Amino acid sequence: MKNSNFEEISDRNSVPILSWDFHYEYVNELKAINTDLKRVNVISNKFTWDEKNLEIKERIKEEVVLVTDLDLKIVFASNGIAKMTGYREEEILGKTPKMFQGAETSNADLKEIKEAIALHIPFEKTIINYKKNGDIYKCKINAFPVFNLKGNISHFIAFERQDLSA
Image (cartoon, rainbow, N blue to C red; front, side, top):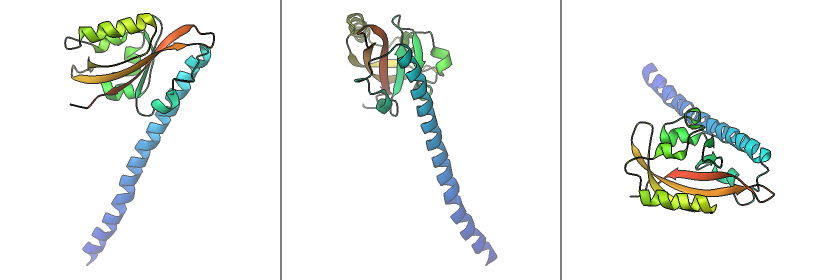
């Protein structure tokens, strides 16, 4: 009889612990998003970006955000970069997004991306990228030139997600 009471109490107590684990993960995700927003706002304020069409606050919740300077050197990557690529932000700062490309990345797609960047126009493309461990993944990129309030280009911003379709 005592044994069944113990099992009943034990079963009841396991749910709150599991719930706390999920809550803890969620709170940590919110903290990471908030930290990312603060960091990207520092860049935005420094260069007086015109943010009206960027939707950073909404998109950073579901997508990886990469910001490059005009030489395409990465100056910011949101926390989601580690989950998607296996790289921490510190490992990619100062490098170009080419570090994610390899033998199976389409040269035709890369040429189209290069042309869009040269023309300072937005582009959307799904390409084959490589994770830190060498695994490939389809990366859906939605990128824009970022202009300041005077109309001068200062950065490029890319919203990226792993494309899990076929």
